[in-house]
Length: 257
Image (cartoon, rainbow, N blue to C red):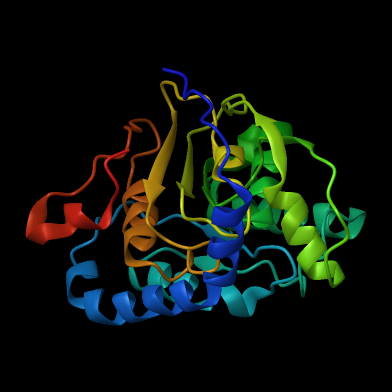
């Protein structure tokens, strides 16, 4: 099954989503606090090493909640320990690979990689180049399929301009699926990147899963945390697509598509 591209949002909708990103991220924080009792019911699987990669301009501080959550589920979980994510630099690419190789040697098993935003792009690139090292990839709001940025007017500080570039895609086609199991978590309410750029071709071991979260709130949103736990609980030789939970009203956390 291949996910079809969808039309872009209007500029007003993009601006509104961008301006409300911080407030909506705080909503996810509140939802996480309220949903902790239910999250204790999240699936648990075979303990294996997990690496969590931060998004653009973020550091391991931004993934602390997610890493602690995964640690409580029994997974040996680490951050990337490379400071802030300033983009694809040789020392960063090599540092991620070295970290994953070390964990594979220590634990004797491939590593699952959870990457937020730009971190998810790094995770997919490593899985493409060295699939033997990677058990699966879970990307959170990662625009790995974004192509053909359209011309734009100068708009403020460099960070804001970069955010606009990530949202300004003229046309997007789903990216080819990886050779390892991969789940792309995306949100139509993403105010930082165009959600269409987060889609991959769906197949036997690849999928796209929608959530209501904002871009900045992906790492603390209870629906996202449930998805990550469910994906990591998949057996190495028996991966199955995500099925929205129906118990205790959890289905309401997820959009219909």
